[in-house]
Length: 99
Image 1 (tube, rainbow, N blue to C red):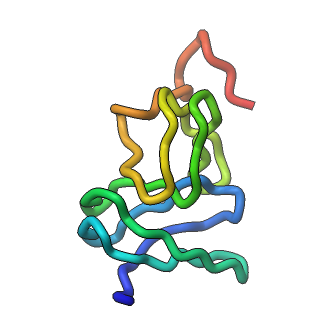
Image 2: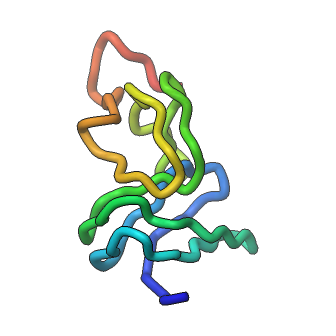
């Protein structure tokens, strides 16, 4: 298994950030606070982009760095790219309250 560097800061996080390009099919290990998860990447993830570390049902909050950054507009599988096509941001919106 190759070691790809990722940023996964909080055990509550539903996404991690790729610190290098990660090809589809790669298995990555994400670690935080003594927790370690292996995630099979389903599609290419570019440097700086997010991928799901667990399945995220449609409508659920997406959590990055321990904070809600948006909601899933479609079901997201573990290892899937998380970006504007499947995430609706909540920050800075007067009609959405982040708790």
